[in-house]
Image (cartoon, rainbow, N blue to C red; front, side, top):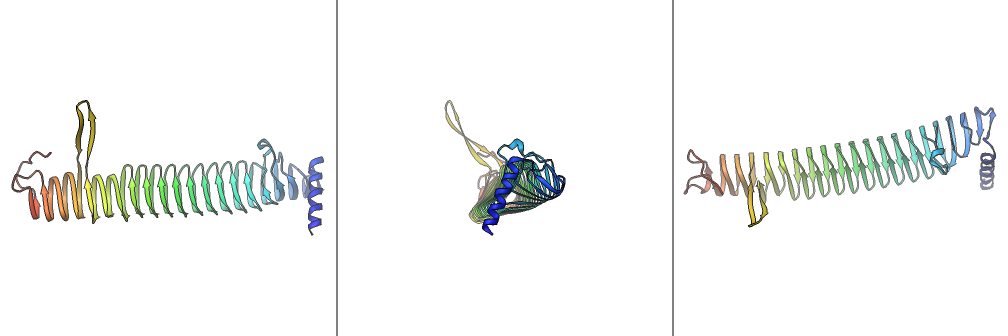
Length: 361
């Protein structure tokens, strides 16, 4: 069998090298050998080059030396021994011992021992032993032993042994043992062993072993081992073992430490909850501390509820502190800076006393 296989490959290479090949009963269809550019049936070729259209079963061994020679389309079953590569587009079933690829688009079911790749879009069911990559969009069920990614959007069910990534939007169900991320948006159910991140917005159910973060907005259920954060806004439910925060928070937050400029919702932070911050600015006369006030609207439960600004709602803690209040504090020590002297610091309970707020530092 080994000798027959070697003889077959030698003959196939000889046919390809010295002619455009031949077909039985014709050069257009039936059983073909060599680089027949247009063929319908079963075709065997060493290296596909300058193909126009192949319909049926196409068996190839290697890819062209020049990218410009990768033209045309194969429709049907593509078998690579070891590479199913060499055309612009492949539609149907692609199986390569080493890999399956196309200069432009791959559509259908593709199985590559090492990997699957296309310069354009990959659509369908794709399984790459090491990885899957596309220059355009990756759509369907995609499983990469090490990873799966695209320069455009990734949509569907995406599993990467190490990670899943998209230059554009990542949507659907995505799992990466180390991480999952996109340059733009992440939507759907997303699980990253270490973390999940989006350059812009992240929405849906998101779980990151270490953390979850987005450059703009996190919406939905976000669970991060160390932290959950967003560059602009955090909405929905945020749960973290260590900390959660964003300039604007409209959520149920459960984390030992939380912080925001504008926080609304139910905040459960056993260790510390902070609203507002102090910004240090260097001037000609030295450093000046400027308080950037914020606000709380809702209920906050923490050992120390630290509000540099206005509280509208209820705080429960060991120590509660705010500049101004429309609501009340319950705790061991309750501090409201706008209250008249003698009523600023009270045990058990404190609220606003007096008609006019006092100046606050």
